[in-house]
Each structure stands twice: as C-alpha cells, then as structure tokens.
Amino acid sequence: MGIRVSDRILQSVEKPSRYTGNEWNSVKKDLKGIDIRFAFCFPDVYEVGMSHLGMKILYHLLNEREDTYCERVFAPWVDMEAKMREHNIPLFALETHDPIREFDFIGFTLQYEMSYTNIINMLDLAGVPVLSGERTKEHPFVCAGGPCAYNPEPLADFIDFFMMGEGEEIINEVMDVYVQWKKKNLPREEFLRCISSIEGVYVPQFYDVKYNDDGTISSFLPIRDEYPKKIRKRIIKDLDKVFFPEKIVVPFTGIVHDRIMVELFRGCIRGCRFCQAGFIYRPVRERSADRLLEISRKLEESTGYEEISLTSLSTSDYTALKELTDGLICEMEPKKVNLSLPSLRVDSFSLELMEKAQKVRKSGLTFAPEAGTQRLRNVINKGVTEEDLIKSVSLAFEGGWSGVKLYFMLGLPTESYEDIEGIAELGHKVVEAYKNTPKDKRGKGLSVTISTSSFVPKPFTPFQWEPQDSIETLREKQIFLKSKIKSKSIKYNWHDPELSFLEAIFARGDRKLGKVLLKAFEKGCKFDSWGEHFKFDKWMEAFRECGIDPSFYANRKRSYGEILPWDHIDAGVSKKFLEREHEKALKEEVTPNCRANCSGCGATVFEGGICVE
Image (tube, rainbow, N blue to C red; front, side, top):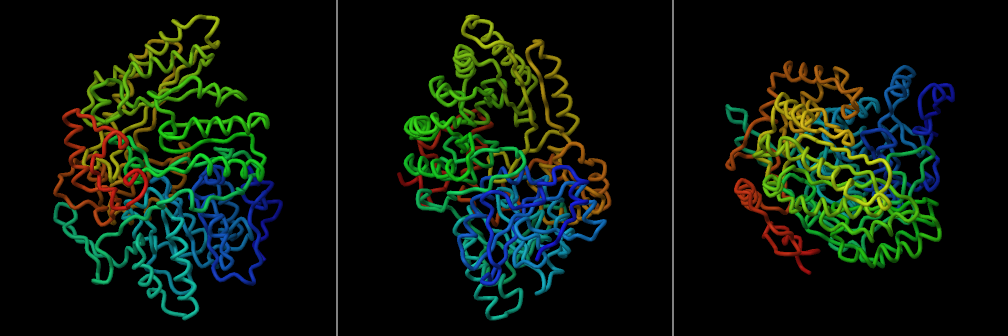
C-alpha cells in the first residue's frame, strides 16, 4: 500500500491534517478493477485547493467511473517538503498515499499564474521528469486545464497536453481514449496523437513557433496537417443535466472557503474590459432554481455544513435569484444554515435580499467599483455609478451594517491622477453616508476598507494589447492614493506591484518563458503568491541569466497585427470583437450587457445559453 509517513514527521509540521486524507466523503476504491489512476493536483496548499469548486466537481465526476480512481494531491507546505526531501518521501496522493509517479495521469488545475513554479516543484518532488520531452512510457501523462490554460505557452515545455474550457465532458473523452491505448500497448506519442483530435485538446509538442528578430512571433503552426490550427474551448450547454456532486469532501482542518458552494451559472453578461473570466466563460448558461435547491438540499444532508455560498461571477445577475433565495431561506433557516452571497453588483443591491441572506449571521459587505471616477468606469465598461454605490451603502447602514470593503484597480488604461484621487473621494463619501444614517439604525463602529490591486492585462480581454504600468509608477500611485485618504475610519490595503508585474509576464508570455520558470524553480522560487516566500530578486536573476527582458511581456503595448502567443486558442470571443471593445474603451463608450443587447462577441458559435434563449 501507500507511503507510510511516520507520526514523528507529521507531529513536526504545522497542520498535519493536510497530509493524512481519510476525510468525511473522500472516495475509497479497491485498486483491483481500476484501469486509470488519476492524480488531481492543486498547485497550492490543502486549504486553498480544497476550497476550489472545480476540483470538487472533477474529483467526484472521475470517481463516478468504475475504471478510474481519482485522488487528490496538494503542494506540501515548505516544512513538510523539507521533511519529504530529507527522508526521500516522493509526492503522494491523499487517498492511498501511493507515490503519484506510479499513476497514469497527473493533472494540474491552473487558477493563477503565480502557481507555475509550484507545478515544477511538485513534479520534481514526485520524481517525474519536469520537461515533457524527457518523459518515457514509464511516466504518467501530465495534463492541465483551468483559466490560465487559455494562454498555455509559458508551460508548454512541462505539460503533455492541455484541456481547454470546461472539463466535465472532455476529461471523460480523454479517459476513454486512454483505456483503448493502454490495451493496445502503443507508443506514448500515439496517445497524444489520438487525443489531439478531441475538440479542446492542445498538445504543445505538435506545434512549431518561429520568432521575428524583435522577439515577437512570426508564425505558430501545427507540425502536421492532421493537428488543428485552432483549438476551440469546450463548454457545457445544459448545466441542469451536467454532473454536480451530491457529496463533497469535508476537511478535518479549516480551509479558505469552508462551506457548501453551489454554482448558479457560468459566464457573465457584463463584459468588464479588464476581466478575463467575463470573456472566456461566455456564453452565460444558468442552472434552474429547482435544480439548485435539490443540489443544496443533498449537499447540506451529506456534509453538515452551516453555510451555503451562491457562487458565480455576478450572483445578482441570476434571473431566478428571488425564487432561489426564498426557497433556500425557507428550507435552511430552521436548520440554522446561513446563506452567503458573494459578488453582488453595486447597482442591484437589495437590502431585503441581504437581510434574508444574513438572518443567521451578519458578515461584512463587499463592493467593487474598480475605478474612482465615472469616466474611468466607462473606459472599463463597469456600468455602475457613484450614485448606485452611495445608495447601496446607505441602505446597508440603515439595515445595521457597519463594515464595508471597496475594491479598486490602479494602473487601468487611460488612468490619470484625478481618477486615483476619485478613489479617496468615494471612500470619504461612504463615511459621510454612514454619518448621515440615523444613529438608532446604523451599526456601531464604522470600518471602511479600500483595497487596490494593480491592473494586469490578460489574454482574451479588450485590454490584452495594453501595457502594464511599471513597478515604480504603480508604487507612486499607491503612495499618492494613501496621501489623499484623510478619514480615520478608512483603512487602505494594496497589492505588491512586483507580484503583479510577474503575473502580467506569465499571463501574456510565450514559450521562451519555460526556461525562466525552470531557472526560478532551481533558485528556490515557490509559493510565489505567499508574501513571505516571494523572492523577487531571484526571479530577476532568472530573467537575466536566461537573457530575457521581463518588461517585453509586461510593459509593452501590442499592435492589433501582432501574432499573440494564445492566438491558436479559440475561446469563442472573436479578435475583431475585442478590437472593437478596445476602441470603445479609448472613446469612453459603454457596451450594454448581453441581456440588454447582443454585442456580437462570437460566442453564438457554441449554440448554448443566453445566445439562443
């Protein structure tokens, strides 16, 4: 059986329950009838990975198959990794504790660019060659999917194949081909050749990239005609019919999102021009309120959780929200189960809904105006006004809330110092709204938190051509904003611009970055999104030693004619549409949401959801 990690080792690391497995609702199978062993890897610690809905869905989906055993793998924290390396313990899966190098597949979910060194580190810890070109028939296939796979190129040297788009159907199709391939005992490349004809599968080694003298791409072509020139993402058309687990694993330790999560819909009607998720998950497809109530009921019974979170990109855009929340409150309130509604839009904020949702427990409120002036909100197509925000917070203060978080971005295209000052002014107006609320109605102890992240240009957004501000400029903007906040009730938090700089590099990078990733890993870079482990100087050394200029990827404006590293991926949103949206941004023109008017983005090719309603 699996690796026995001694109690002595477990007692010497923090949170040993990250490594023990055996949690409530985890899947146990007899290995005798199993053809496929799949290690589902989340390239971050247990608490982060176990909070991720996509992992929960695909873990249980794969385990529905009698021929497959899917087990979970997380990045061991630095203390545990040190013990594993010291005692020659290879990376193992939680369910059986078997080394994952003995599995058929090692699959990574790519949620964030700053997890890429963790992927290399996990492969190394597993004893699997980190470069795909060095793997043989004895090694597992390494695959990946998730939002960052929409620009797969920085990881092209390490991943055997990518699955583009939503995984529920594509992953089963790949497993079916694998069973046949394994029976016939064919060469490794033959399996990759067979799956390259499945829509949504991208095999990097079957494509050849050539560069111009200035470092831009001159051509990106398949090495043989049988491989598709464009790889189109997969979507699930009918969310009511697709698999959703009725049981989820309940951890022994606290995790980031320790609650039931039900997904109302996929996609977003809004089209904020900086938001990658709003474009890559198009078109909007909803689950029915009846199906969501059924899922919530079953998950509450099978887990005993005391909170249900309604998740989607913009929860308040769900068309049956009233019916769903009424139904959930009616069923869950007697059981003391709280309802949480993240991602409410400022403009559709309703006190009634909030009071319903938080009858059991009141939590703080979060709004994301994103920009400090109406001009800049029009540039990014945010579609909310200052009036919306003040009306919403005033309602909330009257309802007894006193904690408000406001999210903004610095460094957005066309931003001026006037726009930044507008952030502070908006904060002060929120404080004013609290002071104007009758004392007998408002909650005690006002706290307003303003948080700013730095704009990162992402693939498949209208801003994919835009440069990112330099680290120095972003820091100056943060200092300027801090100087403009005068109220003691406002706390200001900001993101580290060095981290955003690296995020922009890998978001828009090409294959040349593979050697930088490898070099950074060799220098000890891992857990880059954890402040205490982020080694910016080591990253800069890695770029220098590889002879690569990082600002070429982060701070350079692209022309519409340039071949972008992700142009061979078809996300369903046309480049022409993104160009149109970019032009409108520069003219400060707003595009109406998808329900108000179809803007012809191209997502109708999927013949699903809102496009055919």
